[in-house]
Amino acid sequence: MVANMTMMENAEKPNRLVCVRFESIPTPYIFDAQDLELRQGDRVIVGTEAGQCAAMVIGYPREEEAAGLEDIKPVVRKVTEEDEARLDRIHAKEKDCYAFCHERIRARGLSMKLIRVEQLFDENKITFYFVAEGRVDFRELLKDLVERYRTRIELRQVGTRQESAMLGGIGSCGRELCCATFLTNFQRISVKMAKNQNMTLNPTKISGLCGKLKCCLAYEKESYANLIENLPKPGKKVFLAEGEAMVVSINVINQTVVAKLTDRRFVKAHVSDILSEEEYQQLPEQKGPPQDRGKPAPTEERPEDELPMVPMIATSPKPKKKRSRSRNARKKRSKRP
Image (cartoon, rainbow, N blue to C red; front, side, top):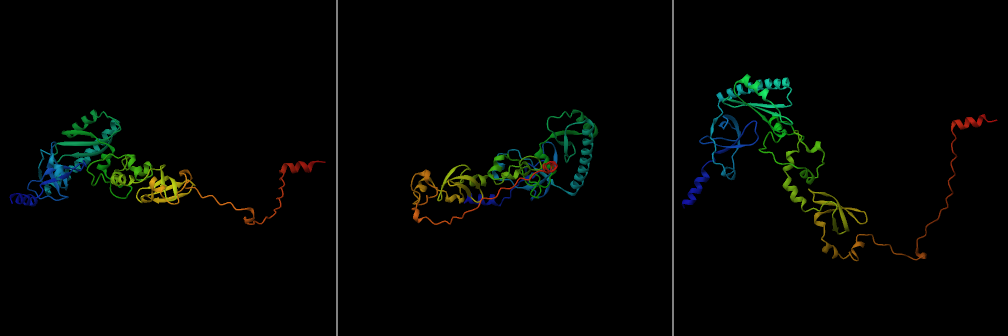
């Protein structure tokens, strides 16, 4: 009885843990909502190790996700009208920081691309995100920024995928980039995923705006991996009702194969039509050695008197065409005495 009441109390107790996402980081973080009634899409102020930041509630964590966490920081409050005015002032300052930093990068000739500038809600730190092919010596740039803004400055190098997540954009599917909307982490994508899905291995077709392989290749990875296990690989010998054949191509979605018989005919068969060697040998029409199976049956020989009469038509040989002489040859012939 006590156990049932405890279960009912736990079921009625609302989930006070929420997942929030910061503007510059796609990875979600878990915070304690305490007594606040938060819903998905609410903007909140949270406390981090660096300071207070503005974030957005994207959902609620599962029990296994929050099981290993010990120190969960609380949510300070919902964003108020005063906070909105302060955030607008901060965004205006971020634009000024971006313009100044971009000008100093060009003046010092640094091989780096500035992506975004972010300032904390308590305005005690400014972070500059940039992309570069290698290591960049930005010590002189850091001095210029500290001298201008007189606060803590951090220059953080990110990859091309993080760049796309921060800037956003429209993908080849016509929708907004997944990394900029709902993705919470970047999975490892390989060319094998594209091969299993029978996609054309064209870099412009399977690459996203970041230049890397598309993240959506991993969405149906498990489904294709399960479906492709039932199909034979191209080049493998299979047994069909028509005879022995070699697989030429496969269709993972339709679960069909195109095979080439020993008599050079192509047939299309479903995966359920493929027979084992024992089943193939038990077929009534499959008699004789295995190497003769699948070949066309020889025609019966008939005596000469039973052969069909074929009319013989004598054809006259074609007349030979006269070679056309060149204009110079005709002129020389006319000049002869």
